[in-house]
Image (cartoon, rainbow, N blue to C red; front, side):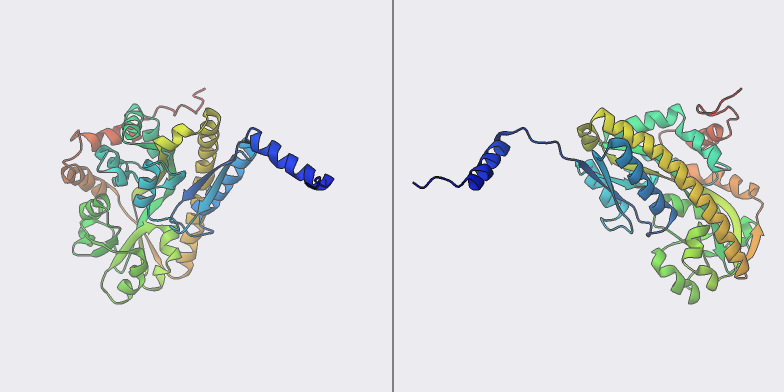
Length: 339
């Protein structure tokens, strides 16, 4: 047998050593899914989150953003997560109605006057207990809340009181809480895909649409209807959620990095959304939209009366009032210095 040439011998030796050498730990890649389009505040915030995670972990942990529902809708993503996929998805607390119905109260109308007030819910003992119950169902909340926007009403009617909404058809997303919210405002809730709203408004199939101002402006709906009523009916907040099985596969250090940078991401997103809302409101005003200030008291009163009876699945009929108690608490939040 001919002797091996020196170069070939070195290659074979290296391959042999590599076959028996301990394997080098690979980076952990997590897909982050959300429905927002590239360039929107949530997308910008998630991309910043990915940068912070890579820096904090030294490249050991990698977040890959997937905007525009590329991986599926919110329900599909949370189910993938529950079965162990390396994915974190934005969701809504109402989406967990089947496994934790009480959490849907977080999406109820008029339970807070501001995002600062609503944030008290996520510091409460009630929320900690609900989060623990969600873990038992296979879900893990990574980021408890990101401000999605304060929801307002754009319509072809001048709306100042609930009576002004009698018989008015308002598009809502197909969710029991959103349907109940618009019904409590005295409107006729009309579930519909957001992509169908523009032609439906133009053709008179619906009379208006509710959403945060950046969404309303982004859909160019002010080209069709010209009255924006500042009903402030929801301070919409959204969690980022993964599966408990996957969460437990991460190291304690990886979990710490995700939680701490996730909190920073939420603050960053909240600031971006506030800035975008203010800028888009001015753009709508410049486009000729009439901005109507609304007396919120009668809307709040109707929500307090009607929402609890719409959800007999809640464990406590006083759940809505409990949220009002928490959000009206004047005590400083834990991270605030009372001195």
